[in-house]
Image (cartoon, rainbow, N blue to C red):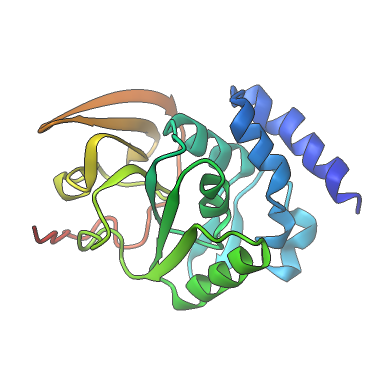
Length: 216
C-alpha cells in the first residue's frame, strides 16, 4: 500500500469535509503515522472511515472524529493536556505536537503498553500514558488546560470539570441514543460554560455509567 497516498486521501476525503481546516492539526495528521497506531492485523484499515475494534470491548475512533476532537478543543503550544481513554495513543500523539505536555489515561493495561510502545516508536517525548480509570479520580498531575474524552459520557461530571485550569477547555460527546452531542466545556474562574458543537453517536467510555468518586 502507498501509505502516503492513503494518508492524503484520508485527509482530503474524510477530514477536510468534516470542517477540520486548522493548518496545524492537518500538519499533525500528515506527520503522525496512523498505520503505526493500529493493531498489526488491522493495518490495512488504518485510513478507513470506521471505528476499529481493539479487543476487550475497546475501539479506535474514526480518523475524522479524532481530528475533530483535537481541533475543537483549541490546543495551544503551552497547554498541559489530559486524554481520557488513551487507546493506542494516536490522539495523544496528535495532541503532543500541538501542546507542551500530554498525559493519556488508559484503563486497559494491554492498550496502555501498546500506546507507550507506539509513542516511543514515533519519537514523541512530551507525552506519557498512565494506567487507570480517568473517570474515577482526579489525576494527580492536574489541573489541565485541555481535556479530551475519547468515549461518550451520560454527562460531563463536576469532578471532570474541576480538573480544568482557569481558561481550560474540555471536549466530550455526551447524551443518550439516538442522539449524542459533542460539547466543549470552558472554565473561567469558578464558572463553567458549555458549547454544543455537533451531533455524533459514540460508544460509552468504560465505566462512564458508574458513579464517579473524585476526591479533592
